Image (cartoon, rainbow, N blue to C red; front, side, top):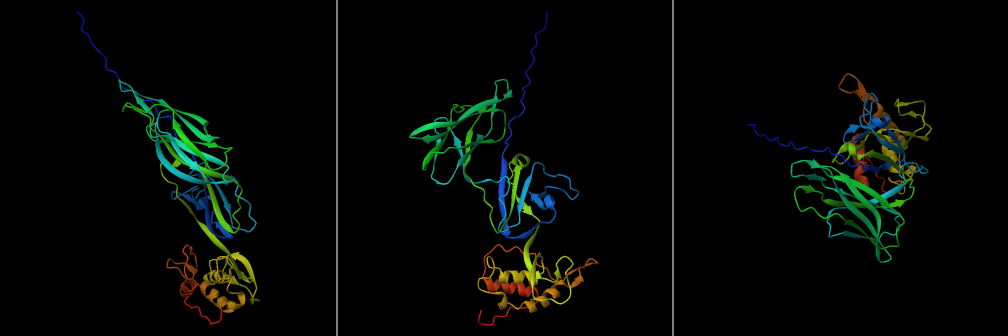
Length: 356
């Protein structure tokens, strides 16, 4: 007589096949322009503290587009940044019987970007298999009193983590008008089916090419998939403002040739004396609207500048300039306090004649 036997079922899990693919596109305003710019191209651009290119020129982070503008008066708009957007973060769950509605009042926007997705999307069978599933959402705009479906989206696949996608809607109605996200798939009532949906954000987009005159900027575009759920920090290694320096001065060699005739030329320099001159005489960010060139003793600054450029031991067997200025001024302060700080770093002091 044969002996009966049974074979147990081994649960199977399908591979995750949904991956968020969103492009980070950001313009960072760096400084009053013009500036010299990145020290060494993409090696000077760091995303989450990692340079885009390593010291040998090999790619650390792929798929990165970087656009630089020095901050000239007549600079061209950065390519690939033909629009600007203002994002409103929602992070709200969208349920079957409760559409989420928001009102748009901005008069100048041209398009709307809707960002939405699922917290997870997976269905577990009675045998323990974990399979793909799907969920349907509608992006709607209220036109002439009625709701019109602009985008009918079905998210189909499997993911055990958050997945986000975006769609863009144009041809917007007169303001104000309402927008909403509506779920068409019934909500899950069991732990066996995970398919919660969310409306992450909407972005009001203005289609206009902006050149940002007199502002040095860096535009960065990168696929956010490379960074997972991390926020992408940006850092840049830059040479700063183009200053007015003596016409007989070579900022790279820090040499002064012949006798100075009192005229200036534009050049990058981190000589603190000429950084101070720039701050005193510049008409936009500096004190140039209150002080003229005749109100500042440029001949005294010339002597101080030479003092700053003198070579001194660097403590490692080499030499370095006595004093350099690599400051990044980000806080509004009283002018006299800032000038005093600069002068004290050069071992001198500002003197006010009581008239200017």
